[in-house]
Structures are given as C-alpha cells and as structure tokens.
Amino acid sequence: MTANRLTLSGTVCKTPTRKVSPSGIPHCQFVLEHRSVQVEAGFTRQAWCRMPVIISGKTHQVVTQSITVGTPLTVSGFISSHQGRNGLSKMVLHAEQIELIDSGD
Image (cartoon, rainbow, N blue to C red; front, side, top):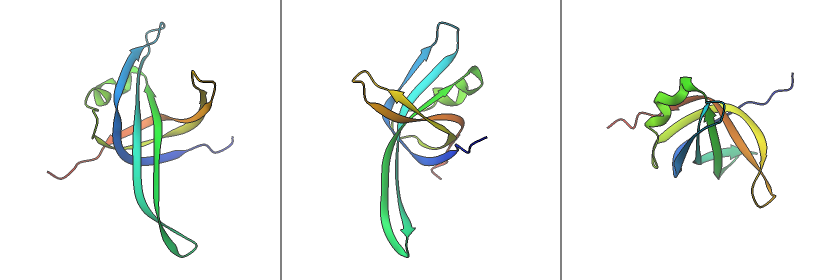
C-alpha cells in the first residue's frame, strides 16, 4: 500500500455545507485555513494554505454539527483530487478523524 496520510490543523474559513447522498450517507464539506511558522533548510518561513475538507458517515455527524466558521480543528485523513465544475482539479482532504481544538477560554 502506498502512503497517503495528512494531518492539518487550522480554522474553518467557509461555512460548512451538509448534504445526504442518495444512499443515505451524510457528508459535511468545509474549507480549513492553516497558518504556521516552519523551519526549512535551517530558516523559518511562513506556511499558509486553504484546504477543502470532506468528512462522511453517520459516526461523524455529532462533531460536524458543531463546526462553524472560526472553529479551530485538527483533521486527519487522505488526500484525493476532485474535479470542480470549472473542469480544474483540486486537492481535497477526506477526513477520517476530526478533533475540535480547545481554545482554552
């Protein structure tokens, strides 16, 4: 098996959309914005990205109901390419695990 794992922390930056497939599987889609400082070749640099995320299945419905814009999360899963309506491909993180980050308030 070829490795395909990604864990990304960030903040939800677009309103989640929730849908149920014709076969009854619930899906929640949102965009996660990540910002951090990383060390590369001995130098620090700003890292930033926005990653579309989809999480599917009834076992994740409880946690996805509390996701709104501004929610801090850590998401783990695999990445896959999706073709958009405009015909362009984009990378999407298919979440298998999602964890709300406690803000400490």
